[in-house]
Every structure is written in structure tokens, then in C-alpha cells.
Amino acid sequence: MDRDLEHDLKALANRARTERDFAVELYGSLCNAEWRHDDGSHWAGGSWRYVANVVAHLRGRGEEYLDFYCSGGEGKISGRVADAMAELGWHGIGHGAALRKVDLRTGESRVLGEDGEWIVERPAGR
Image (tube, rainbow, N blue to C red; front, side, top):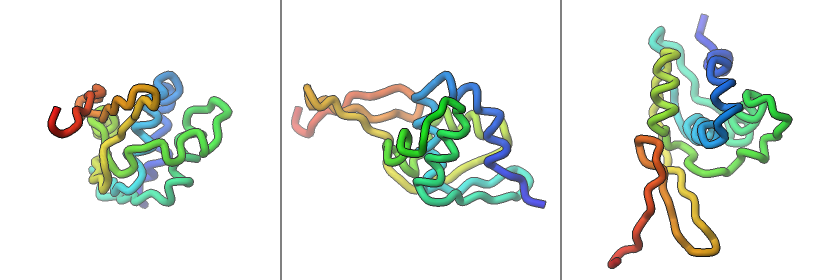
């Protein structure tokens, strides 16, 4: 019988509930990614909408899939999520770009680094 990644995610529910940034990273890390468990089980997720619903439900805060859907980083597995999932025996391969946020007032762009810290992106030539 294959291991159920979505069931195993319950171990991360409290962290996802209390750390919204972690929940957003989890959403991105589950989209466009393949996960394998140490026992050989495989999980390839589903649609971004489906994954957003999984994360919203995991948080247990009355949110809907739209609170996470297209929030960025789809297919990019953050270091924090990789570490948390590895503790559960899951290891992923992402197929996407890093999570990015832009301050629309200033135009400043930040990208999520492998260590979970936001890095200011500098425009070329500056």
C-alpha cells in the first residue's frame, strides 16, 4: 500500500497554521513537483487549485483555495519545506521558479532564497 502524502502533511498543520509564509511555501512546493517517500511511494499532486485547497484545509483557519492559488513559487521547493518534508520521509523534485514578491509602491522585488530568507533582487546594471 502506498503512503499518503496528504495524510502525512497533518504533521505540519500547526506550523502551516501559525506561519502563513510557510503555508505559501508549502503550496508552491507541492505544485509542479514530484515527491517520493523513503518507502518508494510517489505523489505527483494535482492541479494548483487542488493543492491550494489541500493547504487551506490543512491550516484549518476557514480559508479557501483562493487564499493560496497562484500565490507564487509553483514548483520551487523551499529549503524550509524540503527540511520539514524530509523529516516525514518525503523528498521532492520541483519544476518551477522561485517564489517572488514585489512591492507595487516601490517596485522592489524579492525572491525567496534556499534558506527561507527573502533576497532583494537588483535590476541588471545596478
